[in-house]
Image: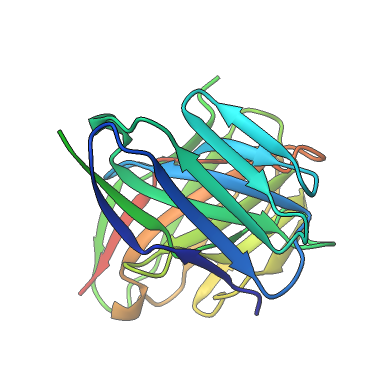
Length: 112
Length: 112
């Protein structure tokens, strides 16, 4: 089946640093979504992207839908301790409305 | 709105026992899905539904049954639990045309 490769697998950074993570696929996607999961909770939607080349921000978070439709990245600027968690990319392949495919996740730890 | 709700939050089963994980949403979303989350593997789609009376298999459907008799509810049944089904289960819903899935808080299942 289709897979999303998300990297890096984990990051340990200092508070105030910027963070970048990305997701790639061997096939095209119609949407890209970025989620954050806190321990013991369900994933929470951060940003949704709908068009190739789209760049969208949500506070300190910025995400882009790759021009080839096969990749996406998420940037977090000026990280703070509450940014700790697992970040997932996800997407809908063409014709697969209602079926999300997830990356393996990036675990982010922030040192105060 | 309560969003997506799941019960129970925790469950321990013995091998061979059956049970139903409940999921409900009050957002009138057409699409609902079940995922399982295992360490290092992200979320994998078990079954999904694009509307009442319509269900289909995801990536890992074996050992699970679903039905969708109403728009609001999408229960997941384990007919004969196995230790390999120890996992965290998430239900999600998506409004038609929005491509944005919203997740419940999860059910943590242990099969001994």
